Image (cartoon, rainbow, N blue to C red):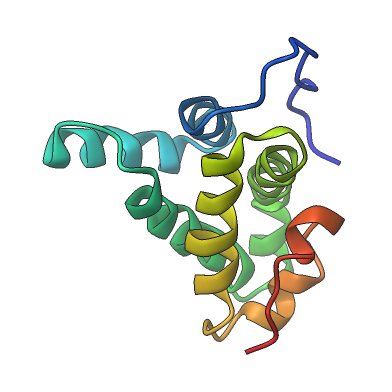
Length: 130
């Protein structure tokens, strides 16, 4: 799918910090959003930060032209790949952050039908069908 290296099996589940680091490694925009978030809150609040992730994914999906979408394809794939990896290898809190603050919240977005086609099987399995 994307170009991020696969997570090395360490025996430990992925935590929220690892998830956010992986997401930010795939998106300069989200790296900056994380910096602003931590500056504003004094710490990383994963459920709140997922709102920025969802907004960025939406922007990548609805940029309009096929050319604009193609320019952001790798970024979009890598963000969604990180979320899928988090659903596969994440600890309980990480899976909850993805399921509640990304998937559940995405279901009310106008771009949700487009997004579903990009989700991996574990992430897609969290769709409630609102």
